[in-house]
Image (tube, rainbow, N blue to C red; front, side, top):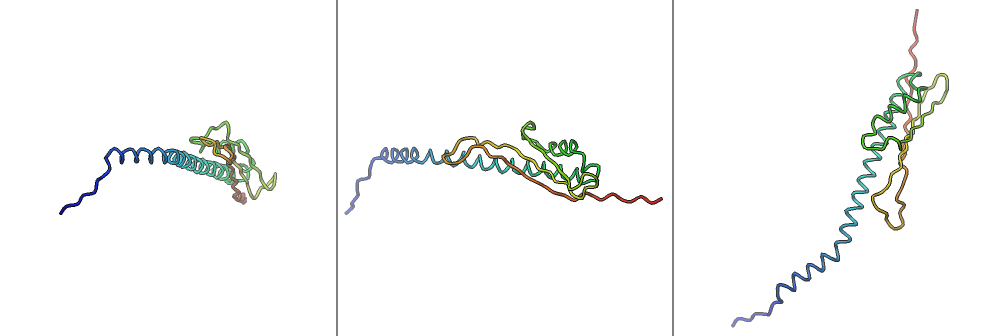
Length: 142
């Protein structure tokens, strides 16, 4: 004897899948946009870090380079591949105005997310400070 249970029509399964997809779609979209924003902030923070490092490397060459604030700013902005150069802030300082031992470079960049999240600010300032030793002047002997 063969007993078969009545199975629901296939359309009911398709309808249930469509409802489930409609319920999960907003969450999937939110997760995708959040992942893109996280990747963007990570990328821009690496770029800001590289800019600060490049400026500090330029300033650490010797004491004359350490006091060249325009050169430090130019060196820092050379690595702004996908950043808006007009928004990149570069400041530099030394521990002495005559014979510096250290040069400190700070780079800032305003980052704006793609979308606004509830309870989270949509704009943050990425900042990185790098301090390097200045190569001491080599004495010249007669």
